[in-house]
Length: 123
Image (cartoon, rainbow, N blue to C red):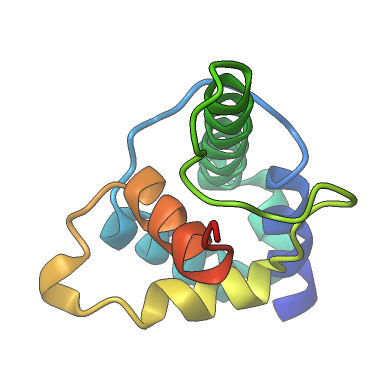
């Protein structure tokens, strides 16, 4: 069951699409509901929503970094140039769970950007 959820979220990290402006609370609720569904999670419309949300954030983040570098500005954060930052779906959920409940109304994009800034600060 956990493997299936990890697979759904891992797929989301690969497929780019448009943002749904989901909050952290909404994302976590959908992810937990998918975990509870087990194998049926792949058939859930929420699996697609999660995939689209993560893919859109990843595409926006990458575009923002490229735009800053092209403009000669310091980017938001500085992940390694070679390879891709390693954030597994399990790690992502764990990071989101660390956000206090009172702050989970923030967008997923804001949460991911904050994580990247903490993890890969520019020096």
